[in-house]
Image (cartoon, rainbow, N blue to C red):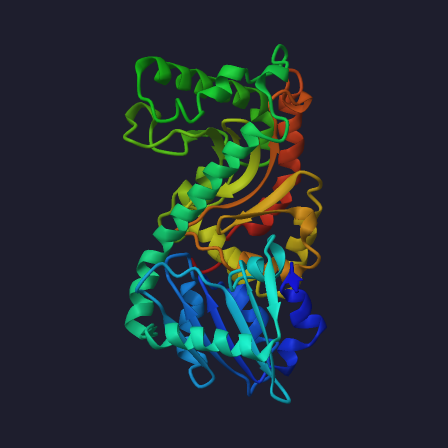
Length: 419
């Protein structure tokens, strides 16, 4: 029997609630996926897990199993080859068992959100064969140790960053080559940003450092400064830093070294007077920023902080989200931003309208880590959109900044709080 969403039979048929023993082999495990099953199985139910570390398994799961669940959950790491199996076996009362073999990892996406497929197995002989297969790998896997966890924890951020970058590259490629996108169908006559402004960030040009390419980048940079002149009074009204920062996704565009320049943006953060109120030395990079960014095929208006940025605001936000009233306010403000807005945490991007309640949103934001990943709340505008025409772009930006301002104020850390 074919199953598209593993979560459906696990919950609707009360498989998890009846489980007496679980055998799970999966290429990757996430905190949310682990909690989905762990929280629904009986306290006496034991679990054996095999995973590989070739695909990003959360070190948080490994730490939690090691510290809190060793009596009922045994996890081993298979290292002799690339491990990509996904098998779920559940022993049930009255000597019954059910198994699922398919494509979904031990993650929330693999269990219920992504497009996966599983074969449901109930034949006792086939289940015994699966258990024999499981034991064969389990016996030759490495026992989870504190040393493995600590070493894996050190390299995990780099593995995840590569995964996020790869996903972003593929998403951008598909948006340009499918879904009806066609440069020739876009009328740029009255647009503030022209076709050549976007194309400077294309795959073929983003890595180049020729004088001609640098001149094109500087032209776009000047356009961003021109855009600032159009909105600077409104920026002052919002009490943001009036002298903007213009930057690329990499370092200084005039001193590029083997790094693709995939975007340029103009950003606004804390004013100098506000920075001086902090008891310890701080800089603009310690806080979230409001920015306007031009990329290969869109313009983004966002409240954001890249990896290694926004430490004080993001830590403040993470702590305050433990308070029910605060996360309720955050949920209302985020979902109130309206159509087109999304939130990106830990490389995952979701539309603001997808959140059903503040608790689900809270779980999503818990994975943020300012040291390694970007946090962004933003909205995209496509080339040719009348909202970003020469005549309308300043009005559009000011309107969107007014929407983001309450969110920015809510997430701001205060000099009166410990930093």
